[in-house]
Length: 251
Image (tube, rainbow, N blue to C red):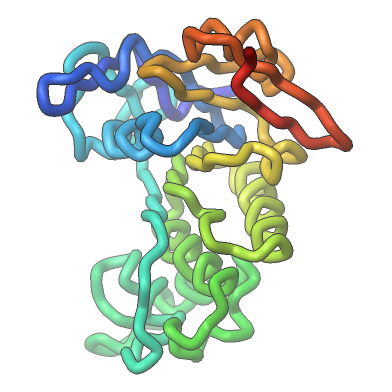
């Protein structure tokens, strides 16, 4: 498994406060990983550090196979609100991911159109390629945004809270899609979420963030009462009920 992303002892300070300390993990080729933690734990900050949008106070971030080259990174930000009156089609949103221009600007070359079409097909959105994005459902919009990030053929795909505000069916479909993209395109997929349960069927690695620190490994290795008690610094109980994991503050 080739490491496409490596964080080595990363620390982050914001406003004079240490918000993340000694963060170390790798994400490999074809691996599906998730940054999990409560609101305010630093999940979005960590993604911004990986993108190079937030400086580190310690450590380093390496992107690319075995550290060779930066590697292409696709990014899906937190929910984008697009008004239904804006004449922006799914085609156009994906084309913007190629070169910053809509599909018809100035004239769509055959190669460019094929790239956009392939990205839409990869995420199952080709059927509404000509629809206005603002008129699509939440799950459909998320597929278009993933295609936008995927069209440049990245080695690493980052997604910030891609499951937020989706209904249960759309949530499950997006998780299945991302797992398929990781396997079939052999890219590293790393997303943030506050709930790990929808991700359990496909998640290879969990990066659990709490109290400014992280624990990483498989879900069974990281999400235990003992492990999270150490991470949070106070008693935490981990319960497994009907295939779901519940984390609650202990006595």
